[in-house]
Image 1 (tube, rainbow, N blue to C red):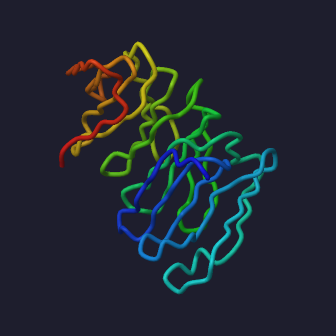
Image 2: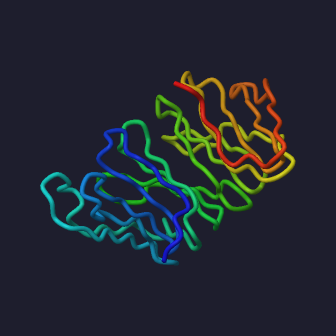
Length: 210
């Protein structure tokens, strides 16, 4: 029995990404249910192994890929995953506090960021794919440039850990859900909280309507 911590669906709906035990992210064929790819790196050298079955629909998955040292290993449980809107990138976050960006076609790790001081709980790309937000047990949400990895803004206001974050459709606002029983809605450009929603229990998920 394996724990599944997070699930992501590609924009095309063909692929499903799952994270959990094993320090890796598994990519599945959403139609057949077959495993097609593993984004995994061994500690230290950063070797990324893609273990797949050959299939014409996913020709790029039928090989093993090695990433250059010292990039890539999640050294603990992978706790969050998200596809970019284009489907070309996959972001993963772990209990090791790292956020890793992967090339979805080659399976190679592109960039590793030590963005947080505690476990990463969720990841989400803005609708245009330009920015990536990550939430964490460290009570913050970090907004980064999805292309360069540059940290754009850190949003701090929750009193306890943040379990989820979500972009508004226009990319101007970001909502975060925390164990402090609040959902905060942020103006991303200014870093100011524009709305606060309070509940009687911890908030573990959040989403905007289309």
